[in-house]
Length: 264
Image (cartoon, rainbow, N blue to C red; front, top):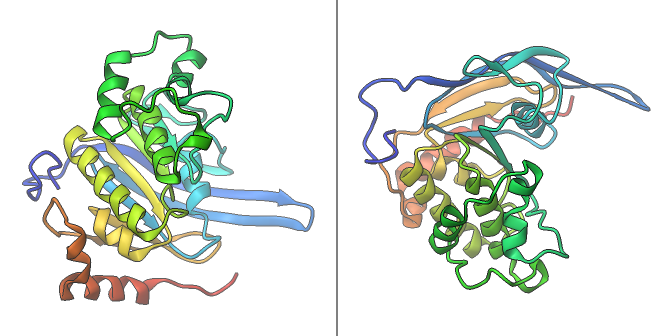
């Protein structure tokens, strides 16, 4: 999908990130856990890619490895020519929780990545992002004074403020109520279309994946492997009411039939 126009791509986009034979084992007190097994995947420049699968299938393990936060037991992840073995300045991550520091107000939470990098905050960019997500005027509020949706909006601003080219999102809206989740899905779709960022998004919701994605990577039960990759050729922008159409519901049911819930 051409993010700027909402039209189908006339030619494949360049490859942004490559996952090559990624495997991950965890050593636990009860023995070794095989979380991810030989996953290979190419993520296109400017693509909105969703990772979908049953709980415990290794989606988050794979995403955290893409962020350079988890080492692999085998295989490699590359961003361009760079092997990802630690956090990379071009990659930002949004977690399941907003993870705002309670003793810092909103603006100081957003400026934290700049402090860590010992850089001057890009205040013009931050101001524009706060306005874009509807948080202008809340700069001096503390996390306890913000709703869950507002906190996640703040975490989006914090990640985008450093202007990454890749945004990794680990089920960021799963704890929100249905109405707020719809609002956030519309917001992230709009931001993606405006910025052309490459987004890799984990969700347990098939409906959310079909609504947001260009492609959906369906993973098997642990150890996580890619069982299917589904292209979503629905036009953009996608309104919430699209989720009630026959075509949309048929896509959801088809993907539901692909997911293997068997315990390992």
